[in-house]
Length: 290
Image (tube, rainbow, N blue to C red; front, side, top):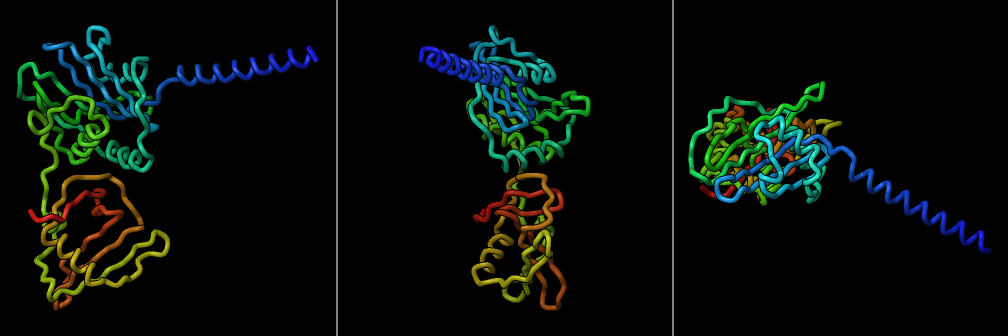
């Protein structure tokens, strides 16, 4: 009986030890590569550092403290190394897989531009945001998306503008001055102009609609009166408000083709999950009157 009790105690201790070892290993495991981050530094009035970053698996991390203690680097490449290795970061959540997939498509397509910051404020601090790509050898390539505060800069590539919007949606805790003293963001464009639609008279035009299946191709669908009203609203008053992703879809879309009375095609619109589909990716749009 005594031996059985001793064995049970030993087994329980081993189970507890394994559990603790697993936790320690998980905590000490190398952080996945950082693919997006934003950082705010204010050393004139308070020695503040605020950093939010996203890793390649969707982990969201936050770092807030004083520069004198944290020693936040000034070079982007050093900042990426710091974020991957620092033990001061706090994990605050996970990004959904669909959103992460869309965000990664933007990072792949983002173009670096010449950086020429301008002065905008004095002692407001500086916020910088970067997307990070990696070479085959694992070398990090930070791409500046924007700066706000004392120094201002905007990467006007549509993918970069979308990522700059994303990073501040993910990390509202990090100070950003936005259009006030920084990037203006995507300038809304009428859907008709963005998609190159000719003048469309909805009283006389003919509309053909299709559901595009990735395996079986296009299938004709009926255009109801409600559908017609929605399409007219999009064409007449719709505005593209920014890029959502750089994904190329082969199906699961709905397409509307517009023809005049003589049968001449005036243009088309294609939609997927509430987004407008183009050859460069998908875009967000709104249909309210200007």
